[in-house]
Length: 389
Image (cartoon, rainbow, N blue to C red; front, side, top):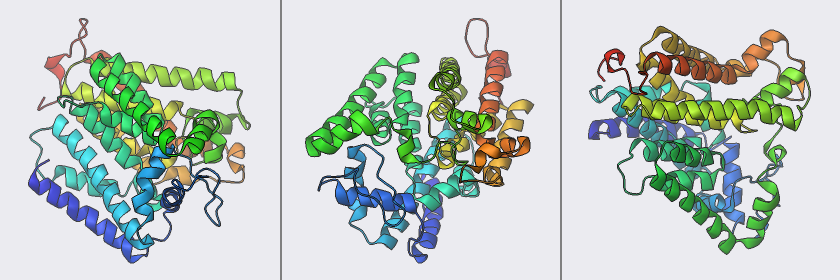
C-alpha cells in the first residue's frame, strides 16, 4: 500500500475510533471479556472468572490473554477507541493487499473506499460493535499467504492460530500447497504460543488444552442464529442437536472439499489463484468449525473482491448476493434466541442461514470457474483470465 492509501485508511480508522470513543466505549462486550482476561491472566484462575453481569468467560488460549493485558490497563473509552482503530486498520490492510495482488494498477483510493464501504456490511459492523479480533487474524493470515516472498512467511499464521485455534486450517493449507517451510514455521510459531502459555500460567494452560479447547458450548449456544457454521445449520434444520456422526460427515465433507478446492486454486500459480485459494481455505475453516459467529464472516469482504474480479456473471452474482445479504443483515431477520431458531419456517431458514448459503454458493461458483479456466495440464487458461491479469 502506498502513502496516500495509508493516509486515507488512517483517516477512515480515526473517524471510527472517534465515534466509538465519544460513545465512551459502550457495548463492545467481547472487548470487555478480553480486558477481563488481560486483568486475570497473571493472577491465576483465567477461566474461572466471569464478566459481570453477563456471566461471559474468557474462551481463548492463555497467550491471547497475555497480549490483551496492555488493553486491560487502559481506560475503557480509550481501549475501545484504540481497538476500533486497529480493527479498521487491519481490515483495510487485508483489503488493500488483496486489491494490489488482484489489480496492481487500481487507483490509490480503491482500497480505502472499499474498506469504508465494507463498514456497512453486517459481519464488519457487528465485529466493531462486539470489539472482536477477527480482522486482525485475517490481516495476519492474508499477509503471510499473499506475501510469500517473506523469509518468515508462515510465522504469523501460527500466531493467529495461537490466539484463536481455527486458523490452524491454514497450517494444513500451506502444507497441501507445497509451502513446506512456511507450514513448518506456522506450526513452530503455534507451538511456541502454547509453550509460553504453560510457562506463564501452567494451571490455566492445562485446563484450557485438556478440557476447555474442545467445549463449543462454552462460547455460546450452537443453534443461535448468529452461528453460521454447518453444525448450527444442521441443528436448526433438524430442530435438535445432530449426532456427532452426522455433524462430522457433513462438516467434514464441506470443510475438506472446500480446502482441497482452495489447494487447486492456489496451484494455478497466479494472483487470482492465490487470493481465491486463501478465501476458500477461510471458508473451509468457517464451515467446519462448530462455532462461526456472524462477525467471523469478515472473510466475506476479500471473498467478494476476488469473486467480482473473476468477471464471470455467476461469480459476480454470488459476490453481489454476499453484499446484499450482509448489507441487509438478513441473518438478523428471523426470530432469534430462546431456541426459537429450531422452529423457523422454510423462509426463515433461508434468511437465518444466509451466510452459510452464500458460502456454499461461493464454493460452488469457484469450482465452476476453476474448471472452466484451468487447462487439462492444471495450468491457468491465460486466454480467458480477467482483464488486467
